[in-house]
Length: 158
Image (cartoon, rainbow, N blue to C red; front, side, top):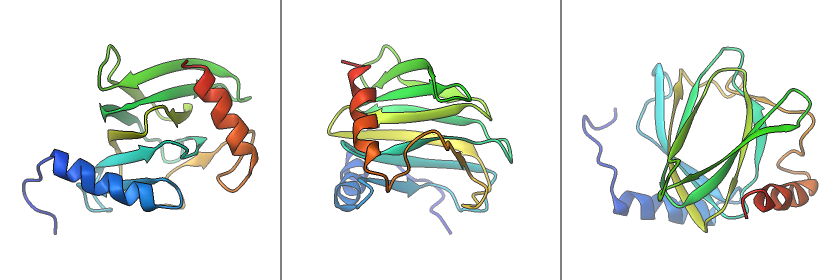
């Protein structure tokens, strides 16, 4: 069972950031919730070079909220064919700090700072088989084409 009160501190940021840096996927989460809870809330720490394949949360429908607490990332919205229809720079410095995405919206992101600490919230419970639907038009995490895709996305924010 989780603590009744969990503080979000610089020490926590550092701890999860270290895990992210050591992770083969170059990211790590710190859950504030139990997986069966109806409201999932966690720190999502992303380091430069992590690839997040575009996806949507459609069945079951789940809205999702991202807030950049430290660092910056480029958040991308796509149409059904993979065309970018929106791009938003989320940063601890603003003027945009976060984004709320409704269910069924294709989205992805690119980490722009060395480390980006985000608070993420979405509907639960978490079931990895149903949590997200990955875009067939985008490279997978194992596909070397992801490097060129990330480079292209980064250039949209420079």
